[in-house]
Length: 340
Image 1 (cartoon, rainbow, N blue to C red):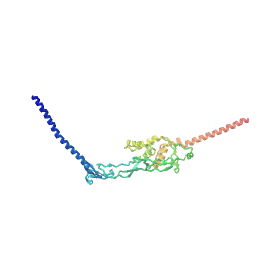
Image 2: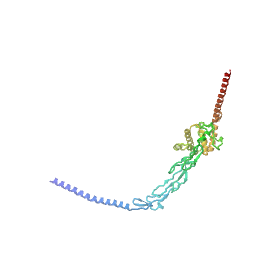
Image 3: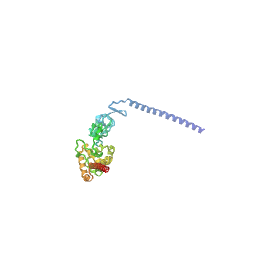
């Protein structure tokens, strides 16, 4: 009897406790939901101007171009916006940023030079250096060397946005080339004294002379030379990075890459003529003097390329004359036999 009464009282107590909880929690949830709804409505009702931005329900002032904020929510642009560092940073639009953008640099190694310096409101503008072009439709990150027409005939000059257009050489004129000309031999150009064009050492091995050759050239000269001969830009960049602190090694490695791609055949003539075409005549003359001094017996022991050809031609002519003389002698002998 007592046990049954105790059980009933326990059940009643649980029911009352449950009702009390529900009665207190419901108002709490209702109040919280109303608070959230009010905040959402308040945010929707906040309308900032074009010169402002919304930050947590507050309209903050945007900084003008050339300036960035120095506080979380600017309310006075004269006090809360600071100017970007001249020549180092810029911002070219109104903003809510707290850091300026870094100015671009125009790297001569990539064929670029500065057209307009960087200001707090404008980034640096780059253009191609002389004898370089960029055919990119967008912003140019590097320029390529202009093509040099081998025959000297130019249809359209190179400019900052397009490469040189060369005229096609007349095939009929190629028949007029001297028979002594070699594919690897330098050919005098009109108006250029013949003594200025290297006719000897056409196939000399330049490997042992590379340090002396690049010693007469600046790093920029070497870079211009190898770019002119289509050494890939990534290869050039890699060499410059690998030998960052050693300019001499940079020049040697760059020249070696070109020499390996070109080969021994005609390399000397290509080197000297290219330097002169690229307006590096002083370097060309000094390199030519160095190589002549380094190979003093080339003309005496080996003879020049032209001498070899002339000697070969002489032997051929003598052989032909000998053949004709023998034929005439044979004919005379035959005639005498018939008479007998």
